[in-house]
Length: 323
Image (spheres, rainbow, N blue to C red):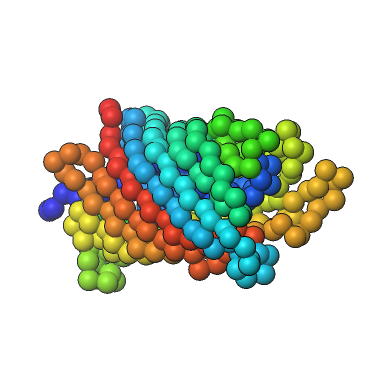
């Protein structure tokens, strides 16, 4: 029996808000929502089966010269957005189970540079807001070709998960600046995840076809420096991939939509600033047995953009077990 990586290492970086990369307006008026850097994509519901500390490090870059209005039309202005960041993350899997599932806590940190151009270009460099899954619970339910994931090389069947994510306003922020690397906003993001891996019999020619998704319900709190109160956002990360030995390849995407209007200082809500953003692209992951680590690379392009930039992104992440 060939030994394969049962679960990915990259959950160590399943955080750092997407808002760090795609905020589009002034300091207090941004597209605000919680979620993972580059999306959770593959293995959304998985946790490493062994307890211990896992670590990840990576890079993300985003570029665009195409800002879209509330109707999704390109605005007739000289606009641009580019950002890059280096990130590190930690994921601790506890040596205990709750209702038969594994439990973990994670935290992610980043430092980067972000620039926005609406005629005049403004840039900011500094720390990003910390994202943490205060807890994430994952349970393997089975139902696939193989039974016990501890005995099988791959977790065939269904795995479900859920947790509570929090974005902490720890990044660099100045309300007088047109762009910041921090959002100065607490974001509470309860979330649910599911991953289903078929056996080889029902795959696309590999060891199994994986369907994964993680749904976030993001509730930004008021920015006390500006009284800006962003509306609730629903965002889902997904991936459809095929496993070939130590390789996993396929498509991954994200769709985010603001469902409540932003609340103005007078207490009224407005729909004029609601945003929507969707992207999709290829993802490739490989387990490196000689290093005991996993490398993931993903590229994406926007197919949907309202009140935000439409652009391109690149994510590279490597993760490994510390102890």
